[in-house]
Each structure stands twice: as C-alpha cells, then as structure tokens.
Image 1 (tube, rainbow over the protein chains, first blue to last red):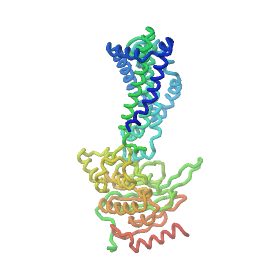
Image 2 (image 1 turned 120 degrees about the vertical axis):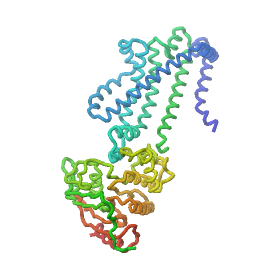
Image 3 (image 1 turned 120 degrees about the horizontal axis):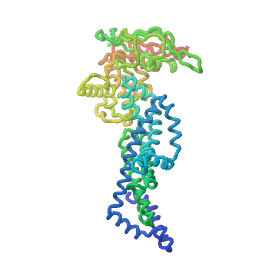
Length: 251
Length: 261
C-alpha cells in the first residue's frame, strides 16, 4: 500500500539521477545541468534571504486575485449567455473571436494601455481564468436536465430561486471543471506575465533576474517551484470539488 | 367490508377539477397533430380518479396541462371554478421518475416544495418531518437520492408532492419504473396515505389492476387523438382488498376491451 503510493515519485527520481549524471560529464554539462549541490546551496540562500518566499507569495497572490475575478466574472457572463438568447447573440461572436488570441499575445497591447505594473498582470490572469469559466458555465447551464427544470416550475420557484437552487447546482460539475482549467491557466499566465512585464515581485521576475545574472540554479529552483505549486493547487481544488460534489454517485 | 358506501368523504370541500372541451395539438413536420380532443371531465373534491390508457394516448400530456407545465392548449381547466394559469402549489405532481434533485438531501428536497410558503421555519421543519414519516422514510433525512433505492426515492417524491397539502395530486405513472413487488407495496402505501389525506387525486397508469385497486373511478382513454372512453364507477370503500370479486370482474372486462377486440 505504502509502496504503491510512492510509484509517482519513481520517474522524478530517475530524472534527477540523469540530471546529476549529465552535470558531471564536462564543463558545458555542468553549466546547462547545474549540479544538485549547487541547486541546494542556492535554495538555502534564497530561503535564507526570503527572496523565494517573497516572490512565490507575490505570484500566488496574483494568481488568486486573477482567479477570483475570472471565476466571478466568468460564471456571471456564462450564466448571462446561457439564460438570455439575446445576450448570447450579442456577446458570443466577440467572445469566441477574442478567446482565440493567445494570452501572451495580449501582453504588448495591455502593457501599452495599463503599463507594465500590477494592473496589467491582473487583467491578463483574470482573462486567462475567465475563458474556461464562461465556456464551462455556459455548457453546464445549457445541459441542465429539462426534467429538473420542470420540477422547479411545478414547485413555483421564482426566476432567481430557479437559478440559485436548480440551475447552478445542476451546472456545478461543469463549473468545477472550469475552475480546475482556470486555475491551471491562471497560474501559468501569472508567471508568464511576470516574465514579460518586468516590474514588481514574482517567480517570473526572479527567473528573469537570475537569467540576467547567469544564475542557472535559481532558474531551476523557480521551475521546480512553479511545477510543485501548480500541482498542489490542482490537488487542493480537486479535493474541494469532491467535497462540493459529494452528492454525485461515485463511479 | 364490501358494503356499498360513498368512498369519498363529505368533508372535503375544495379540489374540484373541471375540464371543459380540452384539446391540444403538437406540430409534427409543420402540420398540427391532435393529441387530445374534446376532453370533458368533472372530478369531485377528494375523488381518486385513475386514467387508464395505452402509451401514446395523451394521458401524460393531460397531466402536464393540468399541472401547468404546458400553457398551449384549447379549452378550459378550472380548479374550484377558477381557471388555471401556470403551475401552482395547490397542485402537486409525482412523475414516473422521482426527479428528486441529486444535489439535495431527501430533507432538503422535500423542504424545497415549501420554499414559497408563508410558514415559519419551525413549522416547515415539522411538516417536512411529518411527511418523511408519512412515506416511511424516517432515518433517511440526510441521504442523497443516489443513496436511495428506486422505491424509496419515489416515496420521497410523493412526500415532496404532498408536503404542500395540495388540493389536487397528480400521479404520472408513479410506479411504472419500479419492480413488481415494490409497486404493489407502494400502491398499498399510497392508498393508506390517500385515506389519511383525502386530496383529489388523478393517477395516470397503464396498469389495469393498479387503476382499479386505487380509483373511485377509472377512466379509459382512447388514442389518436386522445379522448375519454368508457368510465367505470367503483362503489367500493377504501382501504380495499386486492382480490375483491368486483375488481376482478372489471379487470377481466377492461383487459378484454383494451387488448383484444
């Protein structure tokens, strides 16, 4: 049982072994694949002077704020489009055209409008979270079982009650899928925006500074940190979704 | 036991349903197809009416019109003399599938029916508890629908329909999806509950035995287009026994009529 749970660690451990092996080949190898000992020293250094924590927290805060905005806005817009044919006809073409533009493609334009500070980054992260939220909320609401809608009618629920007590709970599985996607997008674009918009703190900024100073080991730490945090956040929201959707039969 | 007696009590005053010249068409490939034609029906307060018919005769459509899910029809439906306009809490319905919301516990599902009632929280809670007990589901208050068997979920649906104290209870093949043993048990339960509550009931079914066992009156519906056929008045007090000779005779006759010509 215990051993089976550790199977997921096998591949990462092999990779680390290969990495260390590569770093010991020659000088070029040692530059491209920084030795584990150097990475360890840098980690102690970054933890000691608080740089890693400050930048990590900045990235996490940015992701959370953007995600929250994207979720609220996305559910609202998705619900509006699903419930009002008029709103759908008005908004859908623009929405579907805009979402084809890759997030990083917006950066030059947004930087021009809002500068390279916090507002630009927040907008980018929110937009990244918004798209999957709109799509999944829309789909979820569209697929509500007509038999459940009818029960709401028979019980004489008002429009708002119908939305709150029938439609949104019925769409919740789909909305939860949206949140998981939005989380992944938000995290990736938060770090991505930090790479392009240089002001402020964040893991992306830490990486850019490390690149400028040829500190390969810091970049590696950042990459590991980004991966690990993304993994943890997804895991936490899966747990949350499971809790919220406990009414579903387990398959 | 089998003494002829009025099987509906005099104290039930409200819940009289009158259907006047009701017709309904569905568009099919652009052409209107009649589903119901010239339905005239008077149901007394507290009467249990079984509507018996083959599938496709429009009997479920009739219930959907009465409950207010479909406003598109010709003719009139009057409840205690008032024309109906959309769904209302004075009418409850149980569908063939229980239609409990999977994201709510049994208790929450039943309480939802009281959402728009002007009652205090404590009183609503008491009503919910009473009706859970009435359908024999005490102990399952916190269960989600997927944790209940088909028969239990259908009991929950009956409780949800009754908790409003509706004047008219509509049952759309309520036991059609259950296994034979559960069906028989729930028919008995329904009879017990109805004897206690005495609301007007209209039950749609294709089960002759069920129609006869429960109904004060059995109305046979004919198909294409759906219209009222024979009506059988059953002067037999509730609660009834299944093996009554009178019911058996009617069963043989209706069976011959509906199946063989």
